Length: 206
Image 1 (tube, helix red, strand yellow):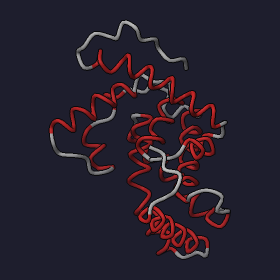
Image 2: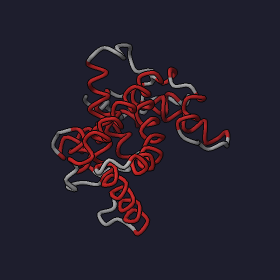
Image 3: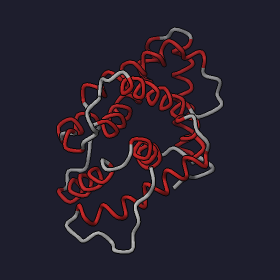
Image 4: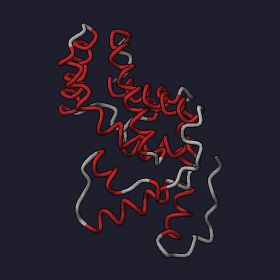
């Protein structure tokens, strides 16, 4: 799940992202536009899946990418460019949540199919949509920090170490959140699918 050595495609993408970011740092708007086009769809979908608020997702992503443009020269190369940008988006989302923009409880039903489709193309097959919706309902039952951790790991492909950088916590904390999230999902997903909750399962801790 978490490859320690990037493959050639990952290395090539990282090289392009760094080139675009360096161009943005030099004030090249065309370089930033390339970076924006690559990052905006995935960031929008990530934030939308975490908070279930299309209006908040738009605001957070716009704020995050504005910060990327203004602070591109501050990137020190200590992580992947995508990890650095994900960290900015995560902090912008936390600020929006703390400011009360999304005070309502996270709810999977608030994420409309049309909004997800506009954020990033999804599979068209009915079975894929059904499975996606089923998993999203399960993720919606998780505490926010566990949900964000799982989204960063399984949707954005971040390593435990990079998630720790993004969320400003210890790697062990990331692993614990993932463990407890898996336990909760193992108990909740069968019930959401119409099956009885596993008798031997215990819910993960927040």
